[in-house]
Amino acid sequence: KAGVTQTPRYLIKTRGQQVTLSCSPISGHRSVSWYQQTPGQGLQFLFEYFSETQRNKGNFPGRFSGRQFSNSRSEMNVSTLELGDSALYLCASSSSYGYTFGSGTRLTVV
Amino acid sequence: GIQVEQSPPDLILQEGANSTLRCNFSDSVNNLQWFHQNPWGQLINLFYIPSGTKQNGRLSATTVATERYSLLYISSSQTTDSGVYFCAVASGGSYIPTFGRGTSLIVHP
Image 1 (cartoon, rainbow over the protein chains, first blue to last red):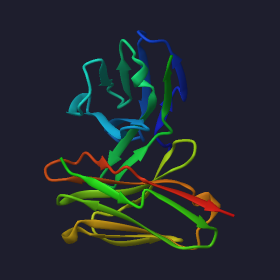
Image 2 (cartoon, chains in turn brown, orange; image 1 turned 90 degrees about the vertical axis):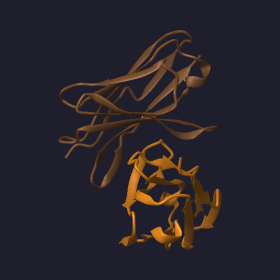
Image 3 (cartoon, rainbow over the protein chains, first blue to last red; image 1 turned 135 degrees about the vertical axis):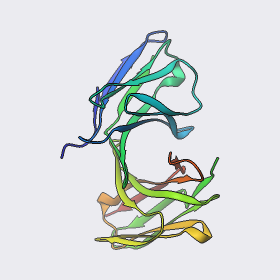
């Protein structure tokens, strides 16, 4: 069974640009969650999608958005990038036995 | 929301030593997981353990939900055990895990 796949692994963007990150969950898993990890704030929950609907949302500004497709793949978008958005973005798919995370996308905003 | 506190924040060991990592949480638990984050950032699921005790090789975990804590035991540590260990807890009406700040473990050869 393939794990959670995140692309790309690394990204460098300029302030003001936008970025789209992709996550493919474990086959058969319909829930996808996104987390942001920074040295200062640790791991913080962004949002969760289930069957193409956003089911839960963390405390992030509207510049952070996401969506989920009918095949359960999810994308998150960050618009008008700020230096503080530099972070490791982790995606997880969940089942009754907890969360399984992908390898993450490391975003650097310059 | 729930508060998740991990201790110690940092731990340095010699290869072969044993250690205990602790996770305290402030509310009743729906689910609890322990993760190991390797130097490349990958979060690896170690245990799904909302209650009871589980063992997997040199690692074991115990959650005492009534007393709101969980322990992760690492025996005969190896250099590959180095990294950050996170406890993630969901509680109350939520199933979204809140992460602790982690325990950073360095194992020297």
